[in-house]
Length: 195
Image (cartoon, rainbow, N blue to C red; front, side, top):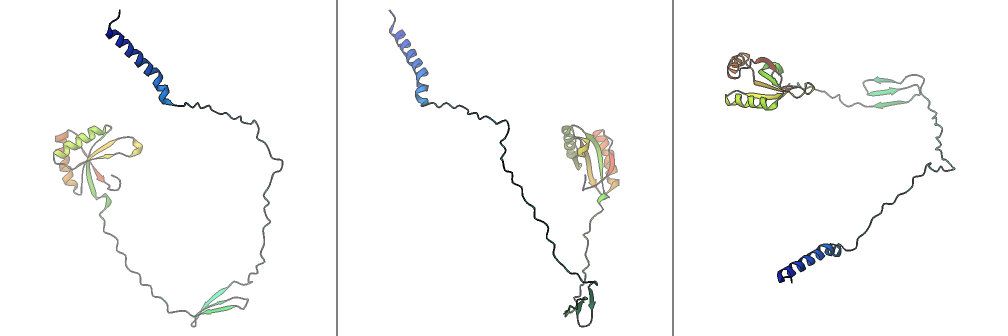
């Protein structure tokens, strides 16, 4: 004979199996089945027997009479006078002439765009190397920047030191930069509109 523990274990397994099998169906409720509906496409569209066309009206011409001679304008002491051969005249008394006094326009004082200089240390394909070099240069006290090269040349980063107005100061720094980095820098003009 089986022990009480075995009977309880078998009873528990049967109850769990019944719960796993029948409870999901009980809690799901009414199941709906969806079936796709297909509509047949006609091979040739049906053509209506009567076709309607929009009627474009004929252009209308206006009878306009233009003067034979050109209209002339005469400015006299009494005012402004329009005359034509149709004997129509209009006189408008003119007001005092307005005196327009042009004010001088001061242009903003700008420095020459090409007055700055930079030391270009190199052009790098790897942006991480370029940023690492700039970080080292900034720790050494230099004003260093990374500029992306023109988009048509690809993904290149240009490392420069500067800008500065003094070409001599940057040429002295180029010697210090060569000792620090081992890169021979090139002195080039700096354009702030297109760095």
